[in-house]
Length: 51
Image (cartoon, rainbow, N blue to C red):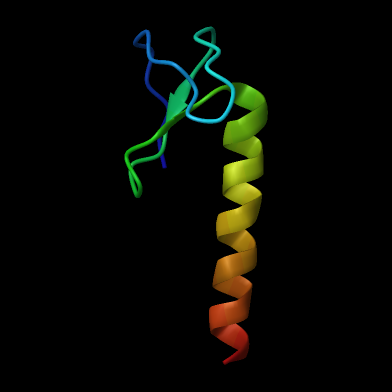
């Protein structure tokens, strides 16, 4: 995942300031929701490792 600096709206709350894009799912998030998205991905990876 990388962050970019273009004016896109967060897919969860529609904010446009300080957004970051997820290279994996190609969705845009505000700072708060980007952090949540990363945590969700980390949990998914943990579950995969436990299988």
